[in-house]
Length: 143
Image 1 (cartoon, helix red, strand yellow):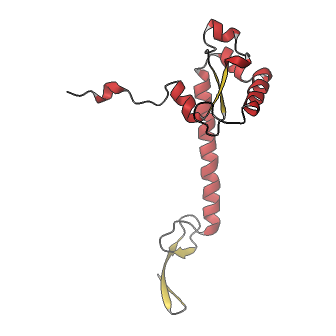
Image 2 (tube, rainbow, N blue to C red):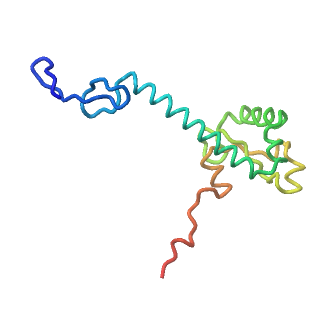
Image 3 (cartoon, helix red, strand yellow):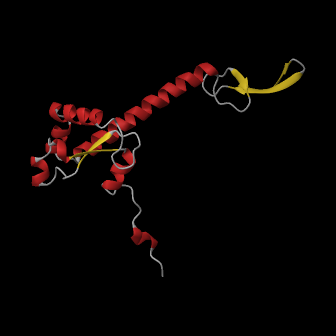
């Protein structure tokens, strides 16, 4: 359907949700687009919650309790403030406090609240330190 606007014509179609006429190329009218965006955000948040619940079921409850404890939250926040929120490895903005000696070891568990066993890292450096998200070299064997 063509519609005349000030000497030019605009191709119109109906909104996929309510049927109102909208310019061709869009899917929803402004009102419906807001509703669809809110629904999409709610689905995304629900997906994140489900994923986190599934992931947390595989974690050792001992460590989950520790990382959710008030002692750890206070210590990690004060450590981040003392270091000025700067990654100790690259100098970027840091958000993650890393245990130098992992708490999964006996020595690390005994030093889990030791200020000298901590290091402030950005997400990138923390992932590198734990060797997360690295491509495995075995996939790229040369013949």
